[in-house]
Length: 97
Image 1: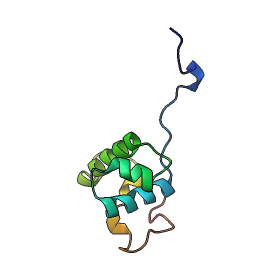
Image 2: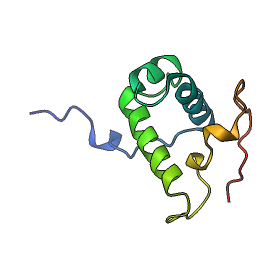
Image 3: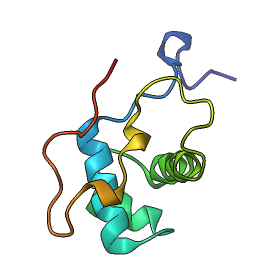
Image 4: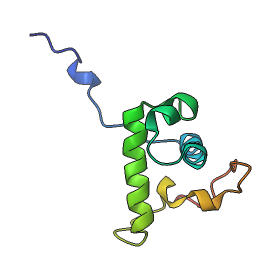
């Protein structure tokens, strides 16, 4: 059997950008939890529904355990409450260290 993915092509996941996370939060605010396919199609179009679901799982874990094993600032530190109801911020309210 031929390997469908060349060995050099296998790599770890690509980190989410600030823009993708903002779109995720906007989708979460408008669609709520669970509609990962809808969020992928309408908001975070650069990610699959599976990737959005995985991001959501990590986001909610980080929200419920904010101080646990916190090593550095993360996109997950920014939640819906950090943005106004009508707009998505153009800059992140935390600094990378």
